[in-house]
Structures are given as structure tokens and as C-alpha cells.
Length: 301
Image 1 (tube, rainbow, N blue to C red):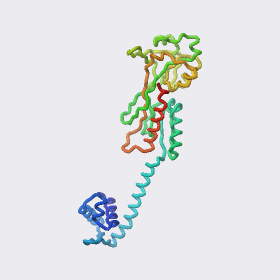
Image 2 (image 1 turned 135 degrees about the horizontal axis):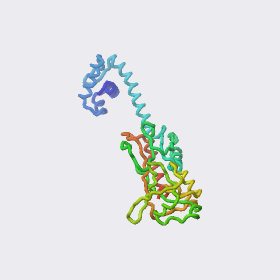
Image 3 (image 1 turned 60 degrees about the vertical axis):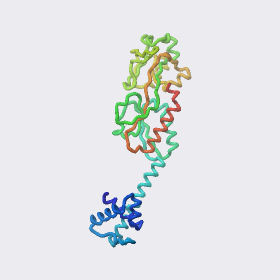
Image 4 (image 1 turned 45 degrees about the vertical axis):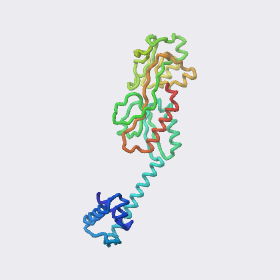
């Protein structure tokens, strides 16, 4: 027990007027309490208490220490109350890093709803398709697709995101729709160049067999929204997460191709740095985002 703890124990003895009651509150025996008070007196070089079989009486030095110990005890209680109040009513700032598609099509709405539910929490939403170092960049939570190279992060699986092949009716007017994945070799395929999730090797299945087709085309980009716009304009075929094109598929601006062959699925995770005591605001945001993904799961399959 350090000096501050012994001073607080001395305060408890004086408040209860009894070594026995102070020992019960502190979860100690009478002898241990007496030992710590004696060590406190030895450290300060003064006598603090006159102790008889029935009563405790403060010395002049003991009275002075008790007055200051009261302030210390009140400060500790105030600190505990402040922390517990923050835990019971989330407040403060959170930084959330998400891929552009997730941010624009789902997360921005969820964050707005979350902040309305917890008005004392402020969320900074960063849309960035590159993976950042969460700790050095001050990021509390990130949404990541596919690979999780940093094993020090805690990951919560949100959903498996299915990718679909699609093209516009205008493109298909002048081209025979592909019937098998191999037919893509004769089509203009618009390719995604972000290496974490994008590649020119499009994944397909035939029965239980899974394989890839190395496609090519005259447009490539590290931004899938740009590729979607090019596809809508009739420039070629794209392979994207269903979330990105679900509205266009429903409206007829894009047509799904090779539906029974497409097999690409990538996991989407919520990741955050390990903490022995995860802040309540962070835990609540993780749970809220997970619920949001669960409700919109149909958009991913």
C-alpha cells in the first residue's frame, strides 16, 4: 500500500471511529489496518491518533492530516463519479475510417442515426480506400474489406459481400451477353485497380469448381463509383460489390450477368485497437453498425 492509500485508510478510520469498522470497509483485518496506520505515522514522523480500548482521539497533527485527507477523499469520489457518468451516458469524440462505398451507401446514414440517438457523441467520418494505421492516425474504429494484416486489431465480422457482374442495356444492344465466364474474354471489361480487393482476375464457379478469368478492357480505375458510371454509360462490363449497384439493378440501368457463376465474396469487418476497457461509446457504435449491416444484409447478397 502506498502513501496515498494509507492516508485514505487513515481517513476511513477517523470517519468510522473504529479500526474494526474501517477494516471491514477496506476488506482487511484489524491488525493489517493498525500496521498501515503505524507505518503512516512512521513515514510522517508524528503521532496521529491516541487509541484506547474504547475511543480514538486525534492528535493536533492527526486533525490537520484528517482535514486534508477529506479533500483527497472527495476528489477521489468526484473522479469516480465523473468516469461512471461518462460510461452511463456516452460522450466525447470518435474517429471512424471507412471505404468510400460503405461510407456513401450505408455508414453515413448509420452515423447520423447514431449521433441522433447519442447526442453527446461526436463522430468524425473519414472516407478513405487505403488502409490506415489506426493508432498512429488516432482512429477509434475502421471498416475493412478482405485482408486484415494487423493481427493486433480486434475484428468483428459484419457481413460477407457478394460481387456481381453487370452491364448496361445500351452495351448489351451491341454485344451478345456472356453465357459463360469464358465469354468475358471477348468483352470490354472495366477493371478495378485497388489491390486489396480489386484485380483483373474475376472469380467464378461451375458446379463445385472455382476458377478465375483474367479479363481486360480499355478503362481501369481505383474508384469503383467511376467504373459504375462508365458501365451505365455503356462502355463495358463491371465486377463490383452488389451494394454498389443494387439500385441500378433494380431500376434497370444495369443488368446482372452470369448470376449463377459469380463466386466472389469478401468479408467486411469492423476493426479497432485492443483495449482492456473498451470505451462505452466505441462499443455502442460497433454494435449499432453491426445491427445496420444485419438489417441491410440483402443488399450484399
